Image (cartoon, rainbow, N blue to C red; front, side, top):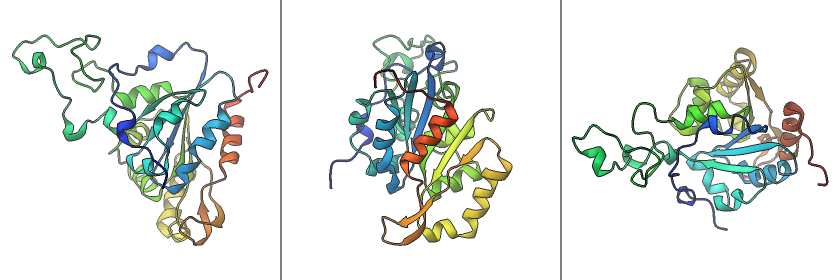
Length: 250
């Protein structure tokens, strides 16, 4: 099996991400996410196809379970238009400890400014610090989750927010679109609970667009519906939805 992504590929940044720093860049901001489905292997193809479009900035959010199906994340950062990758530990460190400095542990009321060498990471430490999932929501013009696993679908409809991606979804500005491309085993897709959950997204929650799966032989060997919509069709949908244009000379 080829090397796959790991959370350690992208250490927690030393500087917090702030949407306001990119508000006037003149670009369309695309937040692309993947969850724990083998269809996550299509992410590099989606990114390579989007790399030819001008005036776009892409940031990636990956659940931990999706990393098994992705190449080392530093490879994705080399693709044009990819400007950042955000993972769970960038908001919640292991053990919920932000590794406070000695000054933060002392009785001194003065907090260490986030732009000083003593501040080790961009993890939230005090009131007023940027909160990553809120900053990503503010930054994004659209969120695309491709693939969306059965588990993450259920959590979204249930209102769960126990990872970075689900927190972005839960805090989303419903005036903007979230597009989802479900991917799961045929019997999972055909299960009655999946139909009810998709019905919520398509019927009750008007800010969602469901890019329905297709029929094919699945990775597990079963044949039928449930496979993620073809990656090229997802790109075509994004291009049309966001009115993207190809950079001259490409």
